[in-house]
Length: 171
Image (cartoon, rainbow, N blue to C red):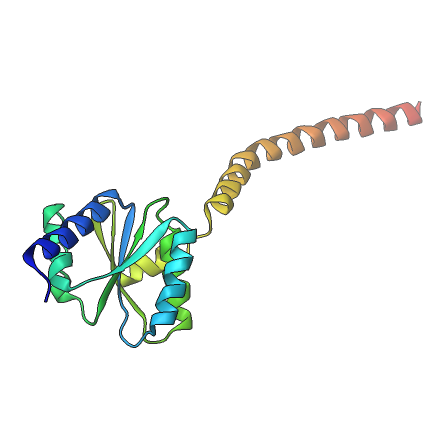
């Protein structure tokens, strides 16, 4: 049996993690082996996150200390939370990949910047391209009008040179 002091330490630790997170993703880990969970934890650590398992009441109290409205009692199954500290997308990508490999593992909900996300929104976030790809697409979109202008101006000059060369050949 856990003492009251130990319980309050767990809740305080979870509340600290919720306050430092950029994203928190709740998942149902029922039926997932300990070895697979350890590999998930290693993958999350590589991307600057961590995975915690606790009672729903501990999560509820930690969330209420942070002023968040999500009630974990409404979520089904055995609850685990992935915290993403460095960026918003890498933890979602890691959990989504893990859920594809393990059929019993389910993404239930998430918290992004104190906004509650549904499971579908978390999956949509996980399917986003990486930050580098998005930046490359932005640069391409910004360069596109300039490239078009250069092509149009180059075409007019090319046509002018061709017309002058035809005039020269005719004389």
